[in-house]
Length: 215
Image 1 (spheres, rainbow, N blue to C red):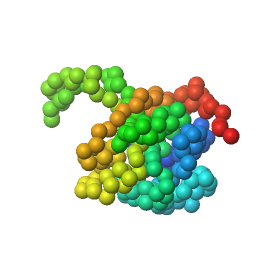
Image 2 (tube, rainbow, N blue to C red):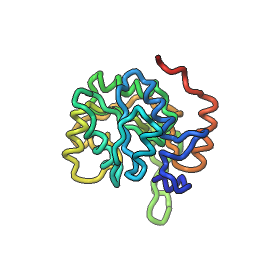
Image 3 (spheres, rainbow, N blue to C red):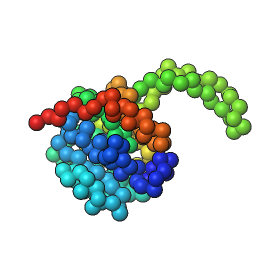
Image 4 (tube, rainbow, N blue to C red):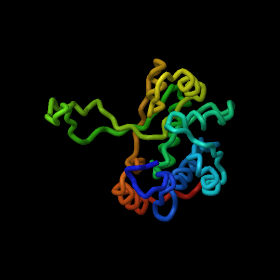
């Protein structure tokens, strides 16, 4: 619902440069050569509106949690599709090249693939009283983005065997004992969560216009 973004509208339907975040995200997904189908898990009350916004997509009612929404979308993906990418509409400017890189890594044999960026800020671990306990070594830390990619069968199994709620599909696959592979992320794939993020995204959109669509 995007509570931190405010506005009383589901986050995916908030506008960036005159168009909903969802439309920006789907447009970039569709430009990746590997993407043959887009399935959207929409807020149940907005299914018709989302279908009108993205006519070429399959739209299903989402659930109360991210995990339930992904499961609902996954249920309508044909078995003939062997690679599934799970993406956040809030990462509306994710470039097609990153989408393609994730898909390619799955096709190369990875059980789970995530885009990742190095952590650049100093990280402190604190106690309940907000006193610093230690400075965490940031060298092995990564900020994870989407889309996350999986062999379809692996993701289906991860959802079927999940015993608790997860906010990250790669974490569910990791629980099965698989290694999660990282590919270099993109500054354009920032997650739009706060009003300030919308301003940053507007600047990025102006500086990095969408490339010419494939025909």
